[in-house]
Length: 552
Image (cartoon, rainbow, N blue to C red):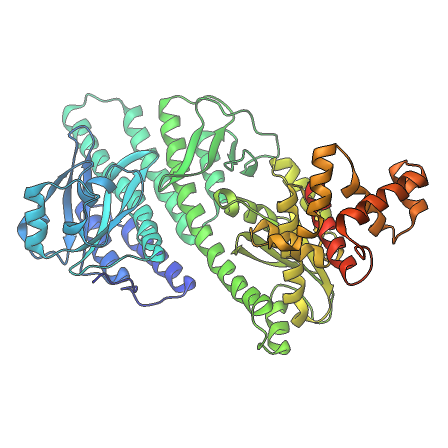
């Protein structure tokens, strides 16, 4: 039986962030590679709460990955296991592509198995395995893996936690390996006296830079401070662009130059977080220093993201109370809103913004950067949700989306002064967004403008609109298709004009007698009473749905 419950005890995002910071502080202070690895696996096993954890180093040229340090492993064969790349869970992860897991390894037919290694796994009693790749500046170093002696599925938050530990571990391990390599090189320089003083100075400079950068990350994950340190060492201005090309942080107010060959991608766990751009081309030693700055920027961005996720989770809880629950006391809602500067009794708008899953986080971060007084969550159903007291939110949002090349499609509900009515305002905003999606239009639509039509359009968007609701006008549509006529449009304008023939003639640029002739034909097709209650409402709604879809 496969267990799906979390093995690790539930922790708050704040506690996990503190654990990650403590772990980073511990392991980055170590210089011995084996000490770093042992600390990593021991801390990972304790934090995640698994039966075992281990660390493997990847030999890309040799095509294998070998377990280097373990915690909780019982057999010598498993502790010294060497796995070909592309086989098993360890071999998949160690290629550096993405996290990977198997709920029951030996029974998993989707994996490439090696019989000798399967025997080692069986002897250790391992079932569930999950690992994350360790990469620094695009270079694959190895894999951090946890395993259980019973079948289970690791939850997304557990994968994300091990991934965060792996990112910290990769930086610390890289620093330690560089330190060991630098020490060996320094010893060779002393013994052989064959290297120049400038080479030794560069080695010392790299080590000092790593110490200063890690201190900047550990004290407070401040990207601006990291850039300032890099600017001082490289003696040139630096710009950090986000994946869309917008400048996030810079050491100068001057515009960023185009990305040059010396630019460095800022990546973590296979995700491109941005690009670090220098104002001029750099020689090989300076380029190496720039890459070290990029590695520590990635680590700082991951810490900032963890803090942001914790804040968003708190906001999500508030929004769930506001929008989904009717039993939360008004006083509690108002107290929770005050945390984000939203005062009791002031008008509030509910805004739902279309955001494709692929770049939902980037859009969320961009909207948060506007500084509007609001509460947001990253994903409420399939959109971003914004509760704001700022009546100018749209004026700020439009240029932001235009500058990023994002189409703006948003539904609006409100304003409301009673927080208990926000749920209703949000549902109207969702209907408005659904209507825009159905009609294929961009822009902002107020749910109050739609009325019952919005609900019908939302049903149509989800494919749940009963065909019988529009069947009343099928005879008109069939007539128009076969005779190239315009009776459907005439019927719509007639009902929209409250039966005013003169107005219909004016809007359609027809003679009144022509309008009357068309109305007679419509009556013959739909039958007597099509334009009087109760059939009038049914016909009018069907015509409005069709008109809205045709305009879209």
